[in-house]
Length: 236
Figure 1: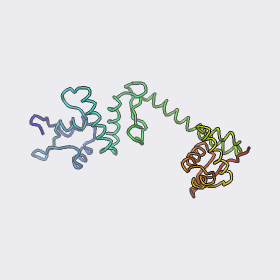
Figure 2: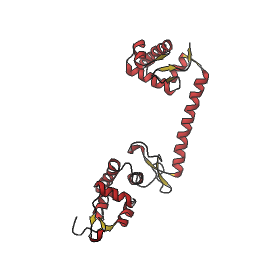
Figure 3: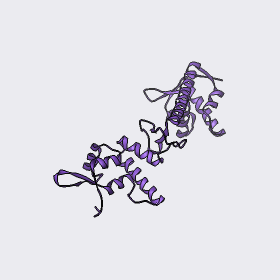
Figure 4: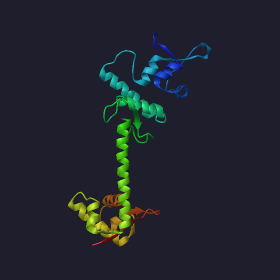
């Protein structure tokens, strides 16, 4: 510790870090933060330790240095404190400049998705109105996709040409291969990727792509045995 390093009380350190005292105690036990113990069992936190974790110092920093420190803090949180939701939210907001990543607003901010699932790049700061708009759009897309799958199942019969258009082959060669695999799927009815590949004489990677596309559109499903089966009857 530097000679002139200011010592903060536990309460002040927690306030600056935006954490609960129990979190600080856990960090102390895990060696994530240095705590100075004085006579009378009093604990103090060096101000430099708070600055190290927050990625800030008490003196102004150059923009590049400040960005490096901020990135260090974000990395520290996502690699060592990913289970601490409060700290993860704080890190995301700091990374995003404490503003909405869509409109740039600074009011009613929160980190989305609310469950914090996904990698750091999946988490973002949004204001209330942008969050409602974005997540409403996602829900509508999910609803549309579910309705499409219900229509497919209810339809029972689809033409070969219609089905090939729906699974969107990227080129003529892929369309030909998809056509061969569709013929094999119709003949097999139930099959694994390997069986479909062998029956159509197409590479396994392409057979896996065919099954993924067909499943996404609701024309195939995978049963408990791991075999794919057609949900519709394909007509010429």
